[in-house]
Length: 178
Image 1 (cartoon, rainbow, N blue to C red):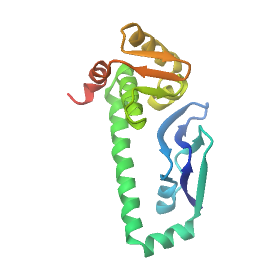
Image 2 (cartoon, one colour):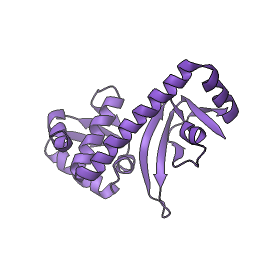
Image 3 (spheres, rainbow, N blue to C red):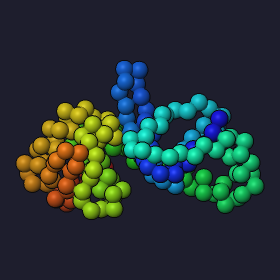
């Protein structure tokens, strides 16, 4: 019944199982839209949306959204471009889930988070959130982070990971690029 625009904060799109497990599919920052696919296809939503930080979201009623698409070709092109980008990201995520082992998926996720946070090498997130992002248990994430901490690739603290050896993480995540 609506399309949503993130005005501030961060919204995670998640797939959930009946037993409560979640996989984070995407994290949306201010200026991004979600819910458009169900409006465009007239199908039920396939994911849930969860605010991990205080966030503001603008709801655009379906009638207003559809009328805007019909009268504003630039908006239609932008929605198509955004949908295509999400499809590319989905394909990359599926490849990682299918072809990378747990360390490779974790390394890939850390590198992507680093990019999203402007590449400063400091990632502010919990091990649970990373586990949800890559489809692993928190214990598996903790084990690999501990191994990489001992190898000098990163440092960990409460809710924070500092990347020290990006080339090592890139090698770990590169099985799909070979």
